[in-house]
Length: 438
Image (cartoon, rainbow, N blue to C red; front, side, top):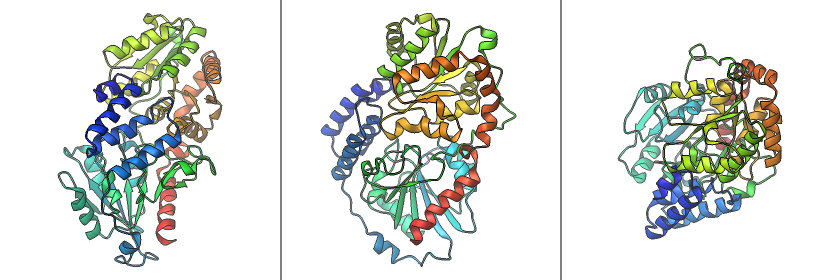
């Protein structure tokens, strides 16, 4: 029931049933992890609520944990030698995480770092082979217990272990709870907190977590990378799929779009979108929502703002190339709140489509602020709903500016830290040295 409600874009109801499931079966890690992930989409959930539930997860699932000191005693001194870095993920395959793991893992300095992958992959594919090629050690973990994987990590004498999944599907939070390596860092799946006492650090950036603000809402020590939390590679050649001319120039109207996960379509988000479209009566909207009751909900919410159903086009999940081509029909993307678009926004920029965003109260709602600051387009981020409506209407009414962004956004992105894998890897490696050598 909870999963169905999540897919239907009803996060509040989904959270109720995930909470109920966790109460009925306290030993089930999956129920509790799903609950933690979904809380990021609750409109009334604040950073303290997220931390409290993450810590409750750790308390409800205790496991034996070794000390960092005991593990360091079994390692050679780190100064002057290759550090042994382990990455843990079920998504070393053709998965959206590859857009971020490939730029980092393929740019690591192999003379200074020995790289291991602990891969819970059931069906290896071409993405798996790409990621395997940049590894010194590849360790399949499917079907193995956390204790068995911890023994593998111990035999490999890993100095620093990175969790790429956290509380998302098929993650191994209890592997990290037992401290499988002397230093443990969380990155990528979502920029929140794990709640695990044995997780030492989390990677973030100055926009997701402004310095001196909110560090108490994470159980880990936050380490800010200098530019960005994300480094993106579309994994498609630039000459294979180019941005097209602005659709509005031949359509005669603006087409807004949002291809985010439908569970991000909060009532507040739809209300803001409706206010934008009400001020531009000829505008249209393309939105990703599976066939079913959620489409009726979107139509109803937008109708309350005077937006007729025939102005809304729904699309389903689709193969990547077809999905990216959908941006050829979109002039301007509208972001979601409380959780902004992350990967989908980067896809939009790469296709020449700007995104108007709004700054949220938790870290997942500051993705737009982070990405747009890295692009030098921070004026597209509003601090409140009224500002969002104004920013979207103003940009949609300025076809010359939209056309210019269409022509230049990909180059702007390629010149930024968002697509500089070498720069990103060097920044991450500096963190690794710092936390392992003190």
